[in-house]
Image 1 (tube, one colour):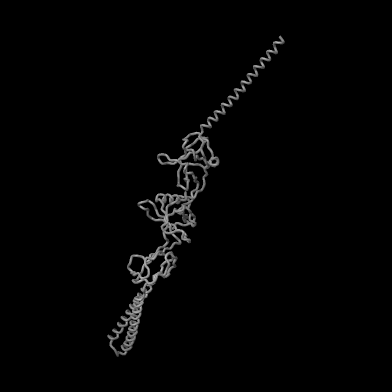
Image 2 (spheres, rainbow, N blue to C red; image 1 turned 90 degrees about the horizontal axis):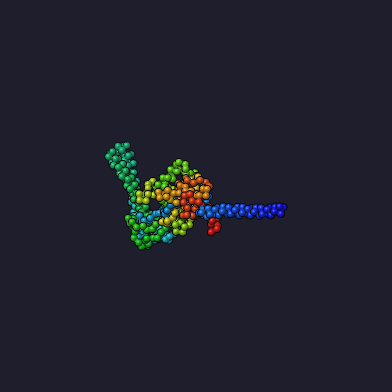
Length: 394
């Protein structure tokens, strides 16, 4: 009996060990199944690149097509007839106001001036004689040594002589004006163009062709166009206080050179906007003025104006590539909430660079899905990866 008991105990211990081993294997198998299930669920989640949105105060800057326009441009034309004797400037040079440009033969006009002065001298002599005659008859009539009729005639002769002197003075003034017009001068300061007439050319005061053109380049105007509907919205936003303008009411503008894509080094200010909308394009012209000391801008150049239209509070800049459109044209984006993609309708104020400025539909700190949008839909499981990390891994 004593020998049988140890054998029974040994058998019990053996089976107990086998049971414990089975429990351990079962436990490991359960843990492995859980890990595999989690891994499988993770594999089902679509990897997407995301960025965290930040609500901030954004300055609205709208890009508008534009063209440069000369601040002032004057066509130079002759005001008297004659032969050009000299051209007094270099083509393409800078000229100053009142600088002589052409000299027209003045001989005829000098002779007319001399004749007008001689006529004035003659009429002044007649006036002096008439004055003395009037004064003499005035004394005689007091003593009744002369008739009233002769005195009246003397007074009339004096009046006629005075009028003749005034007319002669006007003729002298006209002759002097024509004489001065023989020297054609610049009416403004600026850059002068090519000369269409040279020495020996006959010019007339009635001709339509210009001698040359003087253009003032500093400052210079830039005309940009904005959609009429957009301009109305901006004004409404300013009136309601949703959009804050500058303290002094000015609208600043910067330029992008269309040919090179470079930014112009000087800032400009909008001077006025048209009061009518172009019927063909539905746009409104805004005219800005820019300093142009180095004459980098020339009239007729195409540029892009970046017009500052005010400051918008509580707005979010959303990458355009993260925004999609429904068939009705409404915009929406996907954000990550509890590991799933959730569609959010958004209200877009305008574009700015590669971003949309969104005023409604998103919250500060929202995790926006930027890449991987083709592989997801509403409610899809997603594995978000911050955009900076994703770019670093690429």
